[in-house]
Length: 161
Image (cartoon, rainbow, N blue to C red; front, side):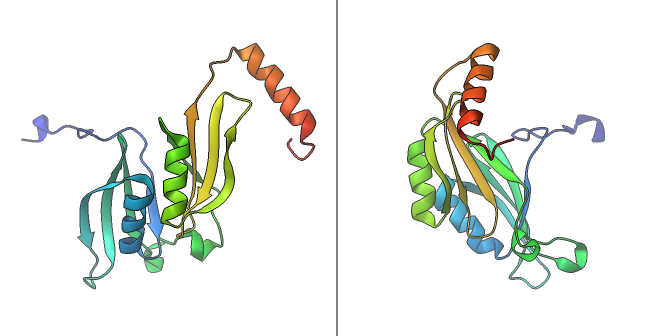
């Protein structure tokens, strides 16, 4: 009955990333190794080889992904020569997850380090062109402490504006 259907199914959040990748089957394997993703489902494309839609669970969040389908406007970061988007993972052990992602084939963009805003934070790029940041919160800060820490950090880095 339509009235009994949950409009937001269990396990879904208001915002969920939907990634387009070149080589979705390989990407699924990578995300399992790099981030401990669990594959919830996979639907093949019309050719029986491509992935029309897949759903992964990373921590408490779901990620959708599919292969490129340029005729339908679905292109990957590789087709666009980059991405303006970074996916963020907030985790208990950023150092462990970072090492795991790099061991699985991620490229280091920004090594993990303690940051002025109170997180231990780093960034990687996956082999499919998507950027991932990850952090563990290590220090609570008041708005004033954050403002002071940011001013000090930006005074050391003239390229940050």
